Image 1 (cartoon, rainbow, N blue to C red):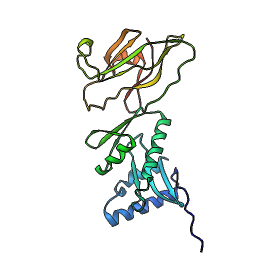
Image 2: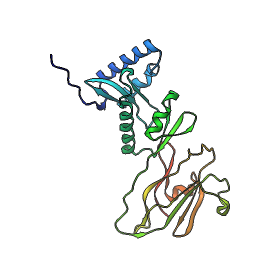
Image 3: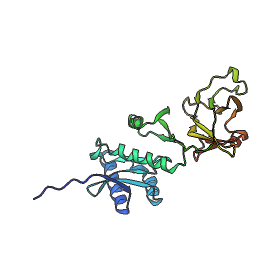
Length: 247
């Protein structure tokens, strides 16, 4: 009798058959150990119905899955007997690339449940900011126009409530991206500026100071009308970012 050839695991959108097999081993895990995500089966069912369930397949059998990915609160689990093989990491990295390609969010936020999963998510690149909640920035390199003039841009992020007193304010972060001013006056940035509002777990409204060619053109809260007029936007999750500036 010839030995069964082990196939290279693949990642794909879960089929109806995959979904049924996953629910079967989740149910068995709950009955045998009292653990696992069978208690969240309604979320998993919804994810499958929405086409937002990705499975990792080994020898035609789904042995791990991620429901709703990383763009919204989701679920990632590997079948108990197939853990420690890198399958969870493979699914997480696939979901991360999908989030980058999707481009609806510039910051991903997740809840690390159970708590024992925190080291796993930290290895993926997430940072803990409150108990078992974590986040990750999604940097993006932007193409600069071939024609235009270089602009000297400095963008500083503050938590200081005295945002209108720049001499006495200490920035939390300072960005100096490559920038080009096109003929229409738009200032294109060489990288997406993401205003990290989770790093210090502050409840204060984030404030930005923008200087162009040595002149301050903005110093106010990111939620102000002036910020949106300047080109500062919010992603689907409400996080502030800038790809370009317009005076």
